[in-house]
Structure formats: C-alpha cells, structure tokens
Image (cartoon, rainbow, N blue to C red):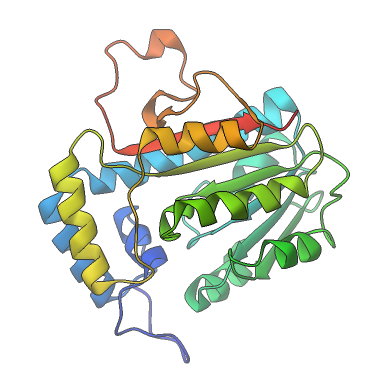
Length: 268
C-alpha cells in the first residue's frame, strides 16, 4: 500500500484514492479503504462499476484512436494511474498520440509524474489544474496539443463532483468551444437509476466522509449535455457503460444494468 508522502492529507478519504481501491490498486490509505468498504457494504456493485468504467474508457479510446483517427487526448480528472490509462490505450493503437492529463490532487500529481510515461514517438504531459478553470486548462494544454486539430476530451467520472448541473454544463461548453470541428467528448458518471435506494445510501455514506462530494446523475443529463452543446452522439448514445462499444453479438445475454452511464459525442 502507499506510504504517506509529505503534504498529502491521509486523514480524509479522497475520491481518486477510493476509486483506486475499488479498481484493485495500491495507491490508497486506510481511511480510503475504510470508507470504500462502508460504501461497498451498502452497494456491492461499486467495484464492478469502477472496473466497467475503466473498460468503457478502453473501448472509447480504442474507437477514437483507431476508427476515428484521433491523435490528441485531453483527459481531465485523471485519477490515480492503474492499468490501461488513456495514454497507454491510445499509444498502443497509435504510438505518436499526444495525451495531456489534468488533475489537481497532490497524490495524483505525485504518482502521475512518476508513472504516466508514454512512448518515445508520442507525448504524455500532466497539468496541475482545476476543472473549474477551463480557460487555463485550454491555454496550458495548447502548449502540447494543437488545438486547431481534433482533440478527444475525456471527462471520466469527474462531472459528478460538480454540484450544480448547469455549472457542469457550462464548464464542458467552454472546453468544447475551445476545440475544433471533428473533436470528441467522452464522459461517464455514476447514476441512481437501476438500484436507486442503494446508490443513494452509498453516496450519502461517501459524502459524509470523503472529498470531493459526489452527485449522482440521471441518463437525461447525458442526453441534455450532448443536445445543448450541439454534439452528435455516437451510437448507441447515452447508455450504461457496459453497453457502449460492444458488438451486438457480444451482448447476448444482455449485460445486467449498471449505475454508470456514458456517452461519446462528436463536435460537428
């Protein structure tokens, strides 16, 4: 398990470390594992939700780097490195891919700089910046990425930390507005659709102890985001992450419902 590092708060559970624990990682502390276990006791699907979210990221990046030909990725809310991070998936498909990660958690920062190393042909950079500063993110990302060429904007499990949905949309709108035609938005977040009571209890337990707080979304949030930003959703649209990017013949039997929805959408 992770050894405490100077300047890092090990007394309060932190979202990236709890998520890392659910993914089976080792970059977490006892306080993170404690609240993680309390949440799992109420909602046993949480570790599966974390794993399926990562699989969604893998399929989305493979699609974007492979079928679409995107070579630039802006991943905001990076989280702690585990396996199959955005740069690893993209650079397996296209070694020349450029990836800029953005986060402002000190633990993520320390591990990202040490572990997020890409291919010699490509570029992997890390920005210590806040989601609430989209203008600065675009400015600094533009030092590595060519913002005149298509970019894949990745917002994985991060918008759920924004309490006000209108504010979340405004942040995404500003980010997308700074990207050219042919860019893509990929996002996912936890919902309370299929197991409402358990997910609501789990969120309450988490929010009582951990930071930043989580706000569960509904499927219509994803659809509204795509519609209001004038984007074109890639089929099958906003769905549980287990159902995106999977061939129809692989969906028999259909995956069980999961409270993690995602969408991939193109900027015309």
